[in-house]
Image 1 (cartoon, rainbow, N blue to C red):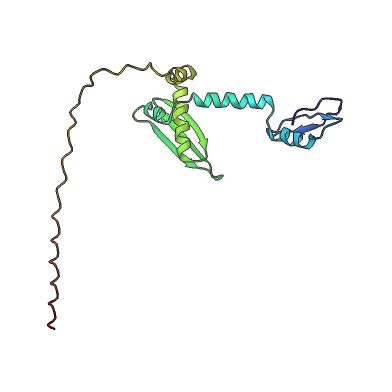
Image 2: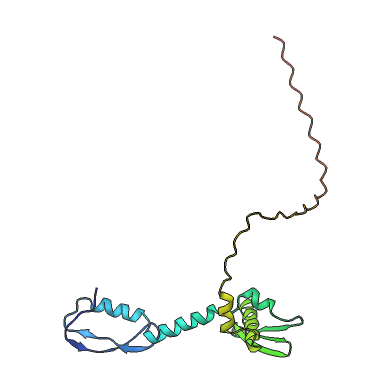
Length: 176
């Protein structure tokens, strides 16, 4: 199904999946107009697609969960509460910097707080994320691998084995 060529007879405004209203072209001869219109309505406009791609790119540069929590200083305090609308709100205070965040669940709020604290302190930015994403060069494997002595964990005290039941006596043969 390609875009038809020919005379455009109408240009109605149609809402797209992103909510933007854009012009849709009606051609004089168009067997697939309804299918084209349905596809048009299911897709986003180019501006919203670009905005989504940019948001995804920025989200990919955020610090990972473990990195965010490890970077918090000792003594960091987090307070959270559940709101009447079933969302969660939280506050994080660490090294004199206070940040706030809201979210759907407590786990997401704690991660958002940790990331917001890092950004507020200037400890994480997109340049740092790009540097963290670049992997160090692969080191060659040495010809002879050093063998490490790995201590074996002490064995747990063995439980005494339960005594085995005595075998059942065999029935005596009947005289014939």
